Length: 267
Image 1 (spheres, rainbow, N blue to C red):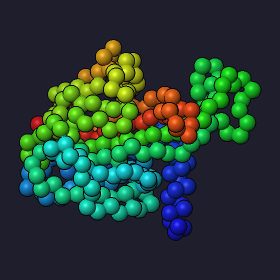
Image 2: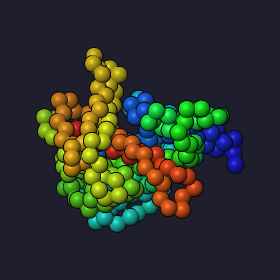
Image 3: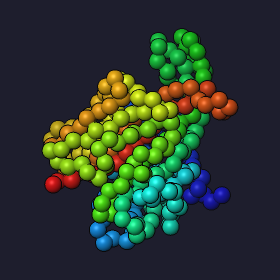
Image 4: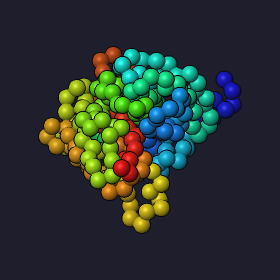
C-alpha cells in the first residue's frame, strides 16, 4: 500500500469515527456533486465524491465505496472512470440514453467504535467508558450518497429504487425542483416511514449569505417532508439514524447516514 493510501485511509477513518457520535449539523457528510444536473446534448457527466462540513468544499475523498450508476431503465452500470485523489474522488460516466441517471456511492461501511448510553444518550467512548454509563455497545457507520442527472425527459425507475436501509425517497422528481416550487420526499428505514425524524438541509456557497442557510426539518407521521425554495442553487439533504445492526454484523449498532444532492432551478 502506498503512503498516499495510508493517509487517505487514516483521514477517512477519523471522519467515520466522528460521524458515529457527532450531531448531524456538525459532522462530516459524504456527497456526490455532478458538473451538470440536466443535459440535452451532453454525452458525459463528471462528478466529485467527498466528505465535507461546508458544502460543497471537498475535504476527504470517499474511500471503499461501491460507486455505480443506475441507468434510466433501472439497471445497474459501472462507471467508466474513477480517479482517487486526497480530497475527492473524480468520477466520469457516459450519458448516451435519454432519461434519469442515479449516481451513488452504494452502501459504504466505515470504521467501528464504541458508544456508551449516558443519561439516555449514546456518547463516544474514548479509552475507558464513563462511570455513569448504563450500557456500552460497539457501532459502525453505514453511508449512502446519491445524486440524479437527467438527460432531456426524466424517468422514475432510478428514483424508486431503494439503496441501503435508510432511504431518502423523492416523491417529486429530483430533476423537477424549481425556485418558488416544492420538493416532497419521504424518509424510510427498512421500507417503513420514520416519523418525527430530523432531516438537515444545506445549500452550497451559503457562507456568502447574510443569514445562515442551514435548516433542520422533521418528518410528519408518514415520514414525509414538503419543502419550498426562495433561492435557486445546489442543495444537500442529509439524514442520520441509529439502529441495531443486522444479524451477523460485527457490531451491535449501526449509525446510518444518507445524503442527496439536488439542484433547485431558477425557472
